[in-house]
Length: 240
Image (cartoon, rainbow, N blue to C red; front, side, top):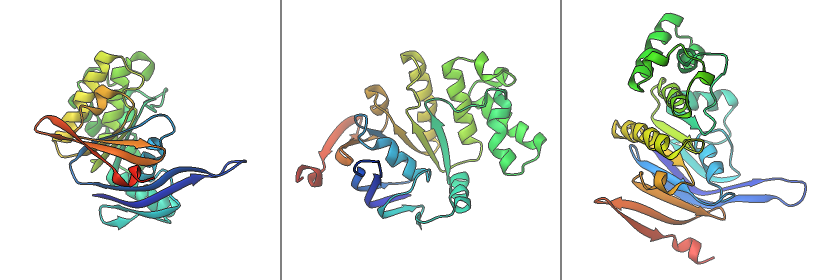
């Protein structure tokens, strides 16, 4: 589903260019449950943004579902995002003056779905998240965990093939983190490819595969085998 080969990304500053990703090779298959970890500045959010077609890359190749993602117009990029990807962010990114139902229904508004139909579908997703009774509450009337579940419902309403979550539990306490991770785990069990950027060990260990970045490269990878995580070092990283 996701194939990345020798991916490089730099940002140009007033001083020297900042080389953030330095030759990433990565394959993520349909239905995988993956976390991307690493220290601040390791490149994990940049990698997620490129996968989500929110940012471009300098060189290398990125294939999404067999299509090369490079040099797209904003209209083309938006099409891929709308059809393939659902986003979940640390800050929830809910519209403060819209209630939960309206926030969840918003992606269908941009798809020209009628108000009646999109509200019915949004209510179904809120019900799935255990938030049916909160449909007409504003974000400032909800807890952090409730807001994140609204955000997940909004991400799922377009039936994406992939969920990209950038520090989805970063603003939550440990109990609420566990609740949100149960939601994401259950979505993955339904077949949604799920990729989470996190610095929290408990979150990464809930996934079946952990990709650890350091200095813009994959330092090592850990896979869960019969409930046990087995780590493999990236030999290309060791040779530098």
